Length: 474
Image (cartoon, rainbow, N blue to C red; front, side, top):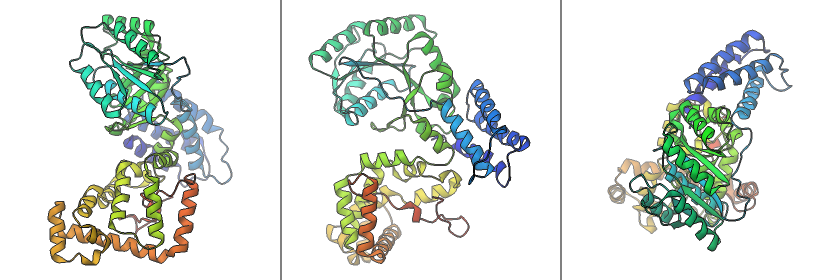
C-alpha cells in the first residue's frame, strides 16, 4: 500500500542525514524532495501547498530535541503535519440513534459500493456485534440486487429483497419498517452508481437521502484514481450531506494521492479502507498509523489487533506448549503457516513492520518467495500423519511421492524439511524454561490470551544481500 510514496519520502529524508543542525538551506532541499514525492503520488496541488507551507514555517524555528538528530526531528515534524492534514484521529461510524441506524452508501459506478456494503456488514457484525440488514436500492444496474443478496449470504447477514420495478424510496422505506419490526441494529443501503454531473440521478439520490434521513451517508471512492478521487468526493459532498468516505482498492494503490487529499479537499473524514478482495478486507482508517507506515515506522498497533482477531488462540497455546516440550511437528508447522496466510501472508505482515521502508523491494521479494506458504502447506498436506510426526521416515521414494502429490519437486520437499529441522534445533537450544518464559511474555502482550504462535519471529531473520546478513532494523 502506497509503496512508491513511502520510498520517495524515505529518499527525501536522506538529504538531512549527517547534518549537525537544521538550516534554511538544507530544509529547502528536503522540502523540495518531499514536494516531488507528493507530486509523483498524485496528491492534489492545493493539499501539497498547504502541507509544505506548514512544514517549512515550523521547520525554520524548530529546535532539535535532545536525543534526536536533524533528520529525525524533521521526520517527526512531517509525521505530525501529515497526520493532521489527512484527518488527525480515527472517526468511527456514528450509530447512536434509535435502531435501526440507517447507513446509506453512494458513489460512482465501479468504485466498489456493493462489495463495500457487504464488507461493512461483515465488519459491523463481527467486530461491533451488530444485527445487520442490507438492502439494494440500485434498480438500474443488471444483477446489482442479486449481487448484494449473494454477498449477504456469504457474510451471513440478512438481506431485504427488492426488484428493479420498485422505486428506490419505496424499497428503503419498506426495508426500514422491516428492520424496526425485527429489531435490527443497522440498516445498510446500497444505491445506484451515478456521476455528479448527471442532474437526474443526483436529484434522485438527494430525494432518497432526504426521505430516509440516514445517520451516516458514506461516499465510496476508488483510490486508484488519485487526486481525481478527492475532487469527485468533493462534488458529491457539495450535493449530499456526506458524513465520511470509504477508500477502496488501497492494496493496489502504490501512490497514495487519494488518501492524502480526500480529507483536506472534502472536509469529510476517511472512515474505512478497502485493503483487499476478501470479504473481511475492510479496515478502520487511522491517519496516524497510515503516516507511520508511509514514513517507514510500520504499524505495530494494527498488526497486534489483527493477530488478536485472526489467530486461533487455542491452537496457538497448544503449539506453544508443544514447542516448550520439544514436541513440535510438521502438522503444527502447517497450522502456523495457515494462520500467517489468514492474515494476508508474509507480504501483508511485512507491510506493517517497522524498518521495512529501508529494505529494497528486491530483498522483500526474496523473503516473500522464501516463505511461500501455499507451496509449503501443499507439501505437508501430501504427507501421511505418521510422516508429519516422524520426518526421519521421509526418504527417497517418499519424497518423490510427496513432491508429485503437492505439484512440487523433491528439492522443494528437501528445503522444507531442512527449514523444519532448523526450527526444531532452535527450540531445543532454548530449552523448556526459556521457551515458557518467552511464551508467557508474549501472552502478556496479547492480554493473556496466549501467544501468537502462528507468527514467525521476524526480528531474528537475516536479510539476504544486505552487507553480510544484517538483521531487521527493529
